[in-house]
Image (cartoon, rainbow over all chains, first blue to last red; front, side):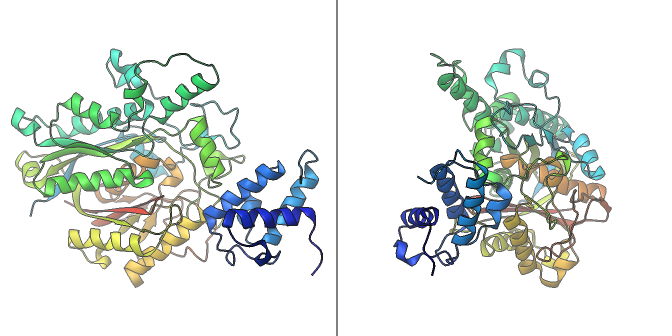
Length: 88
Length: 408
């Protein structure tokens, strides 16, 4: 498996905190279903990502997110479109 | 066994003020969704709603009452006045003690609350108008209606989010069946189009995007549905013990024959299947009708992805093969999601089907969804004899209410 970039590490860390699960159990291929993230948890997580990275995920993109990889891809896209956003 | 009939109707919605305007709009398949005008949209990303057009509270209230009523309570008062006038009741003092009011609301006087908080946080107001508390309290509508018509029996407010009106009407019918009341004014009212409330809904990501054509934003059961559209208004009916109504020669719109109420007891927002199905069965059992006798279902039909597929499963679960023969429609496509008023306006839509033989359509239906494969009466009202119908309301919080109506 390739090395995680800082954004991916941060996403996994945030999911682990929110869901109170060990980060080692979360990979880019984990689905929301695998992690026990239901629709309401999903919205809470998106809000957390948006606040952490200072960006906005459009509703139609948000509705397609069902895995960690989809989340990180969408965040990368949003970051590229918005230089004000931050991974710090 | 005491039976309950409906002898007066009142409604205020985006389709107009009064039941004739509502029925005309529903029969025409007309959407009342448009860009918001009643609230400051500067901070909103999705400024569309099914607003009540040209509503002047002063037309329904005494001049000294206008400041005392929040928008939702004024809607309730207008609808109650229409229903009461139509029922033509003239109660003795003794009868007034056996007549009450049950009005549901999801958010009460939230319009006034939102404005008060804006004054406090933004304008650093040092005082509020002294009527702020009586304006925003959830029982304001029920209390004002009881005062207006001098009804002194059981008077309550029910708040079960999107099912508030259906629970209110169902529980009011139970008060009549059990002998605790003979007449009830029942319904629901909400006015959630305030910046703070809309922002909260935007953040849940369940609102349909406004796009170029707001009227087509709410598309229940259609494969291209994108979410719900907030609405506002009130629906009120006069419920009366059947013998009494027959004796006085009242016009009877239909019998409120059954009521089901259940809880998913599972998830705060995601809908279940078992408990709503049980609520439908309860309502049918109380009405003494078999599933195969139901001609029409006014669906909860919010136009969120999850509601509409789940509701389709629920209907199939209860009705089996008959699910494919039923007419089903979501009138939220036209009057929006009126929160705690929805169940009452949808009961009025259901009564139109029974009384006029016109089943209202699901407007804005564009594409079949393999997961929603029943007859949703797309886009065009249908002339059809309806003897038995149900109206579904499934609230956030997993609270389900179903009303079963029979031709009187």
